[in-house]
Length: 358
Image (cartoon, rainbow, N blue to C red; front, side, top):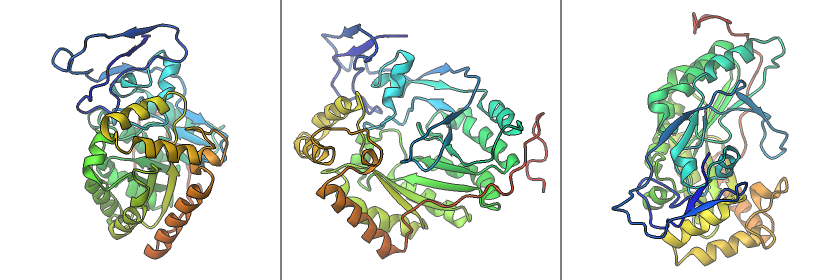
């Protein structure tokens, strides 16, 4: 466990955050008075093993549309400046800033734990979401392959799964996703926040470019895999005007479903995002933050169900109408797919054999 390290404000290549704010649960913080990019270019990614004995998390939120999620990773190297999941690292004694995107906990036993869970007579077949918190196809997945091994178990069990990602890497697993699609047991959502590549690089430094995300939609659609676009987060005063263009581009690529989520800034994420705005878009920072307060009853965040995902007030209504009109114009359904549990079968308890057997 480590105290937060604050004092850093210069941009760091490949990172969304520029410092480690104090962990809200720890009384101690370390201040760096003299920092230069030459003396300390920023942290390299550190892999930490998470030996949790369970792999599925449950929630009771009426906002989410799912009850169970599977997270192979804790922390996310994608580095989105606005990520609502950043405060989860504070429960580990780490910071929601650079720690969240550079100190990644991985669950090497996740596929085996998943197999054990699905093989149990107590398991009730239901939709699992990959991941719900961090991106299952973040850069580390390229060499660790934990998400793919979890998908292999889900294919064997024919258990439905919904995937949300910002990475083209999801196309690597088209063979597995196509098999799940045979049973109406998969949907993929590509999150597209902006079509502005310059903005995306600053805001989501290790995510796929907008063009690559649209290409992933096209490849998945061509393979017969249900795929939609997640216009999220909508950032008022920065990306809200792009909603029609994002929906149109996704529809042309092959998406036939769409949802949107308004920017959420819980706990320390508000300060991190304010810092990011001041570093990257100081001319727009005041406008963005004022719009956020209009949506959240004068605050930067409201946690009540319903409001936290959409906001409230005239501007929230305007965004909802803009999204609805864009979907209607381009023939996209503004909802998720309905996935089936009808073909579920418990996976073998031993080594995986006959993955695609009838």
